[in-house]
Image: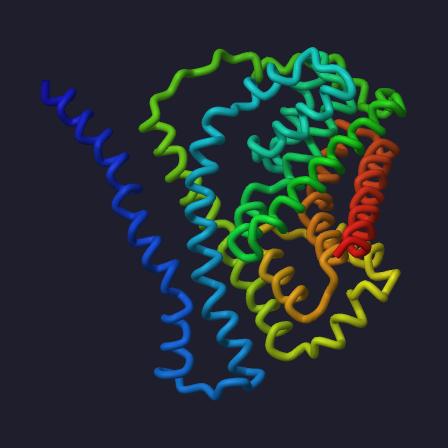
Length: 347
């Protein structure tokens, strides 16, 4: 009896903690600007309009804002992720054909935020269950590129139009890139052992877990992810603060503006070798846009940083030959460049 009573109390506590913390989160988030103004102008007494003041204000305001947004996002995503295990994802994509398979895989990539470390077991599971190569790549492109953290941070910082634009273009790149790779019939460039292995560890039965356990998964995700990425957020915001406070507007407009036709491919070339997560790159994106960089160029830079990275390529080298990795990177990079030019023409 005592065991059941303790269990019920534990379940209630799991529900109560998020409910009690949500109003605190809301009060802090809604009053961040006033708190920052009070700290910078009243307590520290910095002069308004100075370069240093602008940079410090940006840093002090954005760090807690992004961390608050990230905590809420990661908690929600942790709960969502508990519904989409690798096994369930594999089953959903099994038997899908081009082009419907590319669409399904890309959409599924949004809500199944697997990292680069998951690439090999997922790839093995997909191939073993007969998922076409092009459909597999649509998923592998969409999962990191349409990053749930980036999506909600963009919504919080720039509004729903920019967030929707990011999601739509990411989906199009994942669908079309996967379709092209599938049509090229590049299966011969997959390492032979991949077709021989049986992904036994992906054949386990799905466990049914309670909603309180899903809440625990959300809390665990916050502890795990936020503890790993906070330093990238601080570094990214520090870079953004420097750009915000000291870089002249006309300089960024000439370097990354619409009139600079070469800005989009250069932005992608710079972004591909960089390794950063969405939380670290968003503040830099915000600062670049504020200083006159064009939306298409900045979007191309952000997508190349998030969607194409050396660590992922190195991990995929274990299951793919170099020819297919080059095709993968090249097709996605071209898609990102096209998107950059299109949005520079529209906006």
